[in-house]
Length: 510
Image 1 (cartoon, rainbow, N blue to C red):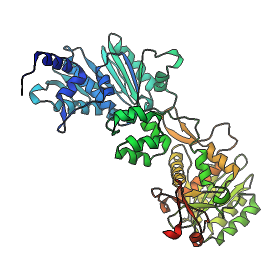
Image 2 (cartoon, rainbow, N blue to C red):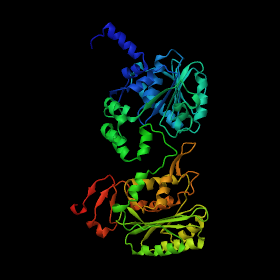
Image 3 (cartoon, rainbow, N blue to C red):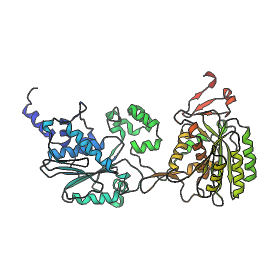
Image 4 (cartoon, rainbow, N blue to C red):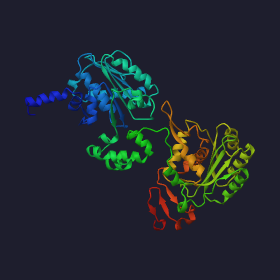
């Protein structure tokens, strides 16, 4: 190798004196030199006292902006002057930064590695006295650099932030990063500058298209991606893996996890266009989906009419009495393994339990019934227990709670997204589907419910969701769904099939 010119040597020394240059100039992981994205290099080198990143998942913030900075500063800072404190939503995630530090340190030549006084899964102290520690609640004497990761998902975020500030009283910096969640909590307050506070923070947004790990053309995406719809920019700039991910997530979830979009607690969990797609009208209406019926007598007659259908039947029942009505949904699977179409919707308001049992008994006695899922909460508990005893192979008792609702909702939403569920376009049913909100609790958990000022508890929706939950083993939500306009398998040859993404197929040509 040729000797460096004095000018080049000076430039090299200046580069290696910066944390980003030190990392990129010395580290070689897996046979490849470490190359930082520009925003990662800025995170390594910045002299700002307060920085907050609203970031996408898996962009490399923990590695490139946190661990790389801390490791390089341990080598570059004067003896016993540097302390890095890693805090995350759990200890394992915080310890991951220590693993990254070890990975970086072991990638440089052995004779260049600095000896350590302490080396554990939670702490490293180099022979020069500079340290890196992980802790749930930042504490200790400064000056220090405190790295708080995934703050939006921390249950004690405010206390952690409050504990971190005294550590920089005599010098240091606060670095906060997280994927966003709801517009409340400490992370949101800092990002939004709540109450006129947090003015010194530098705010940096890192969506997936500025990260080379997720984007195939960062420079091109910087110009074009912000103005594109999500699916278009993922198709144009996303890696193959990212394209697979967006195809297997709800759009709003992908936007939160990868595009720095905040979850809106007041946003309908099921948009109107999807509701309309699954409850078509006019020429696209499901022919044999019957209008809802109300009352005991009509319910018994309507249940008896279900015997004329040939497909397997699935049902869901959400119990009520005086304040909330009992809602019943029954659907037919017109093709084995295919979508479920609503065949009966019953509302029983102020109906005695004996009459509710009579309706339930008639449904459970249908020869085509495959499964009925009954609400096992409160008023429904005795009826569901009795039904489970009499028809153990057909009846499933299901508690609806904050912990079970997300899974049941997600299955229902997945079936709707794939065109695997259709129901009669009843105004009340549509409104109840639209009334479901994605609720982010104070502790960062997600559930689905209605606003407190609603006159209902979305009982029609939950009856339908329970029905689809019972059919979970018989339907694959991975396969593209189809809408069969005539709704009956024997007549499909004379009908048109419309895919949910708008492509029309003539079945007689397949």
